[in-house]
Amino acid sequence: MFEEFIQAAKTIFEKAQYDGRLIRNPDAARLRCLALEEPEVRETKYGSLAVDSEPTSRAAMFTKNNIDTKFGKPEYDLLEAAKAALDKVEIVSIDVQVGDGTEGVTARLIIPRRFAHVAFAGLKLFKPSTTEEPTYQVIMFMDEAFESNKTKKLPNKDVTIRLAHDRRTGRMVKIVRNSNYFGEWKKGVFAGENFRVKQGGNAVFLHVGCRRDTLETPHGDYHTTCSLFAALSANGKTSTTCKVLARKGRERSWLIQDDGGSLYRDGSFRGFEPGGIFVKTDGLNPGDQLEAYYAALKRETFLENVWIEPDGAIDFFNMERTSNGRAVIERRDFMHASSNINADRVDNLFLITRGNIIPAIAKLTHEQAAAFMVLGQSMESSAGDPTQAGKIKNCFFYDPFLAGDRAEHANLFYDILKANPHIQCYLLNTGFVGEGESMRDIRLGDTMGILDSVLRGGLDEWVFSPRTKLHVPAAVRLVDSILFHPEKLFPHDVFEERQSALEKHRAEYIDQFPGLYPEIREVFQP
Image 1 (cartoon, rainbow, N blue to C red):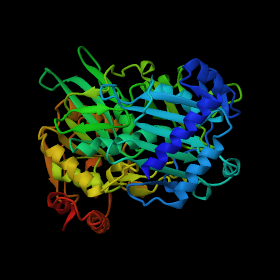
Image 2: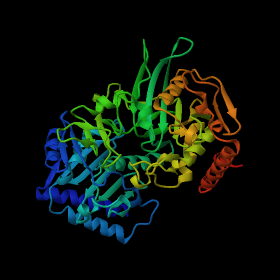
Image 3: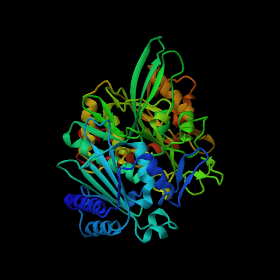
Image 4: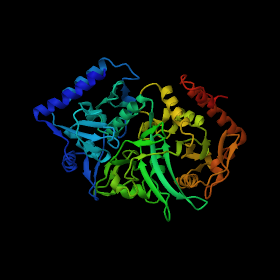
């Protein structure tokens, strides 16, 4: 049904152009003016623009794609509704470059003028381009249910989102009904790359951040490493990717990419967002996230679902409306954003997880890394389903935007790891260990202390923990070793019961994917 989707997009675009209703590729200044016409958009005391979106998060529960689901009459009706809703109104359309531009991949956003803020923010995350045949297209529209949705919780809203991928070319069209949440545009491009990249069998797109560090080692020399951080939204990916570790002399820390890119068989990495960074802002403060905090106060930063006081002041701690505040920050305003969104060689892969019986860090084999990616154990956040925020969940590859055979996806990832034996893999718990009075929070400072030791080459000794069945550090400077031994925070029989239940859950979950390589499937077998 991809052809019907691409034809609908063409019809909407060309009819608006013929009627003189199309505002095509306006510059940032024009988009700013258009956005300020929206009643939900405000100007902050710093001169930046802020908006309250509807809904305040992605709507994954209302999203389907044509690879995993058979499309039929509801999708035909959706296309007709999109054409009807956008038939008489002014339309804003922007074309953008995806990645560094060398592959010629582009994306187009088509929205009613009423949603102009989405395009304004889009030009910050991606670089402007002009194309007649975009690789990906995202079309957003609203109908009479849009206003009444505002009083409903996400599961009760009337929202429809459909993605149509072309297996042959990798092109994609996404239709979004009754949402003006910026993440639907961003993740539309994400989902397009996710499906397209793996079709050649040479790369896999991952929900990861990427950083490069040149740090002094314990031996006095300098060592450069490139690290990926895989995680579900709001589990610590941006925090661990963006915080500076460099302190002195020739040390350098560079942010490469904060939310996605492709790992290739030759061990290289290619980012997909060349213009900006998408940061979660709840509780953002200079003590924990100095770099992101001051960048979020820049005039060119776009804020979504962040509390703005009547005088225009920004309050990152007020979450009365939602705990899914976001900032789209231009790379030039982020003090250590690299000029390059790619990396020639990946050295480390950190899988971020949550769970109170999981060590703060553990070293993994490639087989374990693939198995834990399949497991995708994380914590639900307000970015996904606000009604389930805080609950532990499994999300295959930390990636709710996948389309296609999951086992093939995991097997390709494992093949790429095996082709790059130098890539070191780790499991990183960014939550807490223990419970009740024995509970110990794994603070951002603890996590960054662990990363500092790993990236400086200071963790040479790993010991097998028979009770968690993972290899953990013998010690990490300035980090309490109890964080590596959660079994010590529980009565013996309680921990054994929890661990047995976790192992059983892991084995049952991975059994859902019978096409996995035996090396991956056997990781969680008794």
